Length: 117
Length: 196
Image (cartoon, rainbow over all chains, first blue to last red; front, side, top):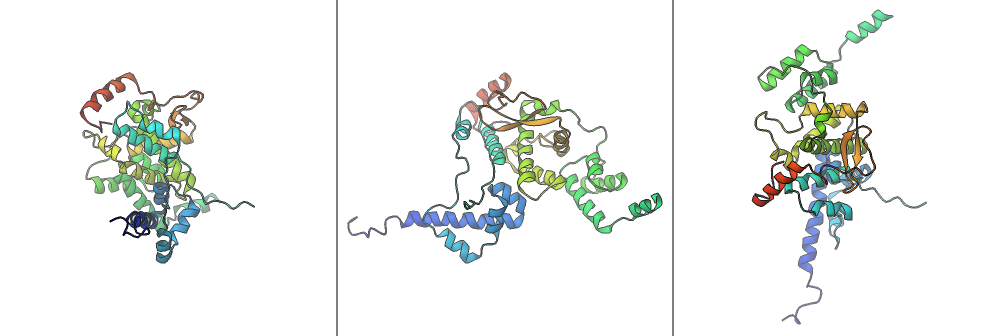
């Protein structure tokens, strides 16, 4: 059965789902920023430049960005000390949740990579 | 000269008046006390108290503002204050929202948190950190009575008194007081999300 399948067909489901995530991320962030720019920046953890660029993207630009085969939004808790503090025992779920919120609020926003001169 | 200045001061801008009223009603809905409104707007206390009455259908509370900085140091209060102030700092340092609008926005973002809703105080019908307390907290920071100290274990900054020793500071989350530890141990047996 598996021999008859085309080698190109195997991961289409996965890729489709990934694109869906990309698209909903982009659309949601655009909606949040248009609704309230400052609050959107806080929630998304984006810097002003990135947020302004994201808002100004047209629908076709959003679509082409979203159709990438890899995820375009990043994990915001990529710090070992941070993650281990969030997963240690001895606290209830609510406290962990607050701790995570504080850490996210205190993070520096994602910057646009500056080209080296 | 002084008469001229007086005449100018008396001439009120209608637009500013309207903006003040909308700002004041936003703050009243969040539970601000009259003293806060008086400090942040140019409206008279008489008009402010009428506005308060129209929104809440009761008289504004009287008495002094909560002026204690120690209140922010106990376990739950410290966590709530830290959450609010982190949001406020984020808005002030990275976005164009500044001043009183930043306090209002940070406070609404703070109220949106699930954990804050769970901590709602049924008796006083207020969250742990009231709007007036949040406003006072920002003032305490401005007058250098408090600072953010970074915990040496989890690397998160917490609200502390000014001149707290920065070296080896451990926050209330990493080292909760004994009575809280006992309470948490009891809770985790019954439910994942406990009281907060």
